[in-house]
Length: 212
Image 1 (cartoon, rainbow, N blue to C red):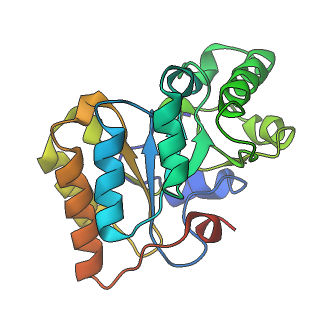
Image 2: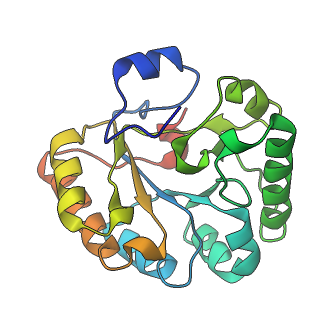
């Protein structure tokens, strides 16, 4: 499947109902892909702390290996780290045996900074194969997709504002990026998203509770 603009249509959610598309608590969940990164992660953590919001960081294993202290900081702030593979390659480009190696290499990097079990997975670029759910079951991983893709990696705040204004719901799983590509707008993207949600009287939930 290709990445879907802004919010996936119901038919996709119904066909792939074993994936997580929205929260189960009628609360919003913020997620950040691609970290940890020295340019952006600490900025994000500070802003989340300002709002007392907990998030899931879908990290790349290679980045955890490069920046273990930043990854530890994510966990130290009581956020959750999810598996975004080791190299961030499109998983449609290789077979499931290779996907297993990607997951294992991620786990090796993660296990050097934490003794907790990684519970959540997100495929790079949002692209996946039909039998991904079966493969992830072997690792006791839940596949967390989204209901709101902000396109913040385009580094254009107007695009983020359009996405949030038009597609934000009370049970949204929102994708932002812990990536230098959106360095110029990441703080404003978080602020706009959170302020818009609060203006609608929506609540931000605990990640684990949101994904039960």
